[in-house]
Image (cartoon, rainbow, N blue to C red; front, side, top):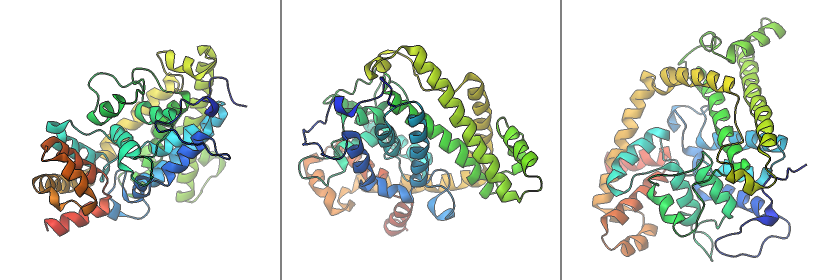
Length: 379
């Protein structure tokens, strides 16, 4: 049963460009479908999380991560009585703005873009779905509903202070009420992201031999999960033992989030989605105890995985790729593909506009394409 504070597609604030709605799909389902069919969504297949695309076929990519986030978000949304279609739309769009080479690529591109307004992957996701996807006859972007755009922009909470230029530019024309919290559906999508990467980074780190099962079996949450598997299945094959333990870790995080959020939603007194936005605090959350455990887990992963010597070596190499490509295109924007030249003509030698165009192009690259272009243009 849908809760009264769930987002109702019949009461959507609509799309920026008016369209005749589908007779067999809700507006949020249509948003989700447009996101899945977007070019930026397909390119997530060859964008990575921690490891670069060519390092192995079994590591997560942005696409497999996004699918996992969507699955977790649907489960939690259903348990809380929320709108699963909106939750899934936000979950599937949350990483559209990521650069090649994960956060390493984003850090490099942001540093290069500081003189031109910087770079932020959440703001870039808004730019993609409102401008850069150009396949529809009547509008640029995907013409998503206000609720989906709001969720993409502020699923991590209110966006205040100095806004990323891409988000500020769009919000000036279409107010997303960035100072408030988003819907409960968007909040579920945000924490589903945390659940997914906290879990699958252990899988990938173990596969890369950055740490061992015995080491992570001493961490909070994981220690109980490994112990339970050993009790139930003594002498289990190591790979099955690992999988059984880590899927239990998944269950602990999801169960905690549902229990605590269900209580927070009941205590909020919210009777409609507008009440959720007006609360001034999130309503989807982990328990304090689980947050403390997750802090220890993240500290372990940061030291042993995200800053492992082998990972840092690749980080340095791919940073050089971005650092080489950006000034090359900025100095000679005619190197951009032909389809960018109309925008280039409209930029009329405006250095900021051209830099932002170059940023859009590089951010849209996959790991593989960025490496290929670097080899072709620089050697």
